[in-house]
Length: 395
Image (cartoon, rainbow, N blue to C red; front, side):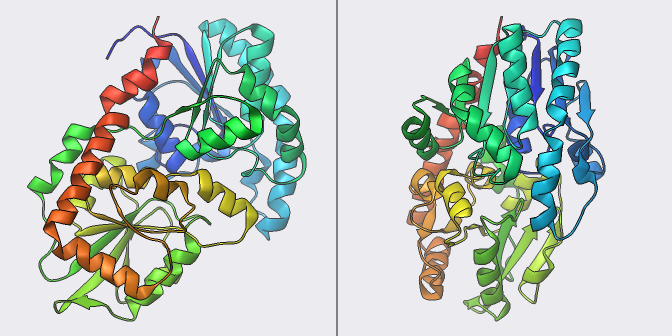
């Protein structure tokens, strides 16, 4: 990779790392950057009190953290979280002031933000406008839909269009989000998502093998409200007992928090593993699963319409045959339909048939695997990272 980069300030609630999907994506964007040319501004709550496997994934560059009232885990969250988020908006002035100090000291030439909450991206916007520093924006979730309450929603609603149009470059997380943002805001964005070491992942299934005495399914990563209900349905079904050719079907979930409501005779928790270990876990499974909620909740369903998931790219990169159970309108279905087996209803017989075909129809599975390899190489490899992202920060 070229090594002469602009001095860059990354600003978001989270530090790039492996605590969740969006931090993973940003970590992969920046892991080949010159760490002497990079600073991170993030929320102290996200940076501290993490497991060692997470803190070890943080990039080796200076991190400046800012306190949040969310360090107090008040219940019920549905009541207190919007209030805490509104109070946290008071951090914007503090972040801007510290930003001016670091920009002057470090000679920052570009600002990158990935909106999550309100404060860090708004501070990035104010700094860019006042100091005439190019602002690069990467939308990993539909920003206003992820902040639907009180003061954060008001601030974002007021500045959203100007914020997007001010960006030197705008990257969006899915092709469907590109269409939505064009219609809503009149802006043109470029698709960008997760990047990985495609060549190393591609050969891992030649080195490891799944067990012979059972059908091993795998799920990796966070389980948020875009997945919860269908995950519960699927796990309850597996725990009742499912076999193919006398072999039990078992699912192992690798995630940070133990998902106790899903666990049972056929569903196990594998713990939280380092990102570098995920290809090995996938190679030891017959199939991978993506289980997306069928929901009428307006905020969640809108996020499902524009979100695709890091885990799916991991699965395809390793050649792990993948079952997607999802509403047909999901961005996940649109983007990955040629490389995964998709069932668009919570229908046990349809899911059973899809699992059986992935296990038994070698030609079908091979076609899906090759489509996955091609997609990863074209859009999610290290070569693609240079073409889509890094070149914009070269001097």
